[in-house]
Image (cartoon, rainbow, N blue to C red; front, side, top):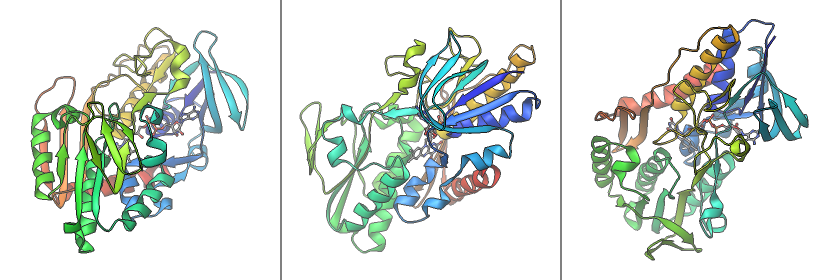
Length: 375
Ligand SMILES: Cc1cc2nc3c(=O)[nH]c(=O)nc-3n(C[C@H](O)[C@H](O)[C@H](O)COP(=O)(O)OP(=O)(O)OC[C@H]3O[C@@H](n4cnc5c(N)ncnc54)[C@H](O)[C@@H]3O)c2cc1C
């Protein structure tokens, strides 16, 4: 019998657990540990902020859904992993102390390094969890005039919700007859081309922003905030009446002691999602050190690959499933439609870019499909 621990109840961890349960016989024990029993469907948080769905539409109870799939769920905080002793230290939660494992999948996502931006906590909105998205929604409703600044901080690696917010805000203000009273500015710490890793995608996105009269400031690295002003590393400042920023990301601190992380704390893995330098340990999702944006569909695919290879290992076979680093993104409401982009990041061929209403619909259907098949 093998004891498999999966750390993290996000896209990567949940899919890995489900696939493992399909692959392994009943004699093996699969346990998923996460700090909250709520699964959050993050791509819907922009819609939540704009009142287009409810909190109960974007989350479901993990314990309930996993038990049906023969996976034990433990609600607890992971503090430390000892890859040599093969033990995970649980700081607090339903259980505490050290849990042994034979195999591990690390899927704890990323940490928000808000402390890197002076004044972030006090003065910026973000929408990276349900409560913050709702709070940001209240601020949107209170905005009547002035300037809305929306963007990413350097190291954020999450462009989609920033652009979706800009387009949704433009349409929201239009409906209220207030569009001409609010200037909308998107700030990006890098060029759009390097943010999206593609020239075609950047061109289409810039065209959609211009169509909605949304201003774009590229290579604008915000380092500090006051109540109504944002300043960059080069001393430029802009005033705002509403600010939504995605803070810098960093790898999970629980990965630190495995000594396999890059300068930002992300875990080095090979294309089979095996953590480099350690046996029987895999990683999947936002926590891994791959280039480009951090996205849910990547976490899903990586979770699948990790599970398939881990199951092969347990069966005494060679792991053979390989991950290929593709980006598929849909920016909802871009130019009144949806902007779809598909790119193989590792081969760096030009992206396929499409723009029409179908993609906004497809994005919502994807959420619905996930809800129906996982909750
Ligand atoms: C607003 C928003 C919009 C987005 N839009 C899109 C989109 O349109 N398309 C797309 O592909 N992606 C999108 N993403 C990105 C996508 O949501 C992430 O890439 C994805 O959630 C990563 O999955 P993950 O499993 O790696 O990490 P997460 O989903 O972050 O899951 C990590 C899990 O680990 C738990 N955890 C963390 N630390 C600990 C600890 N120490 N102990 C115990 N548990 C812990 C967390 O509670 C969480 O359950 C969006 C993200 C946001 C925030």
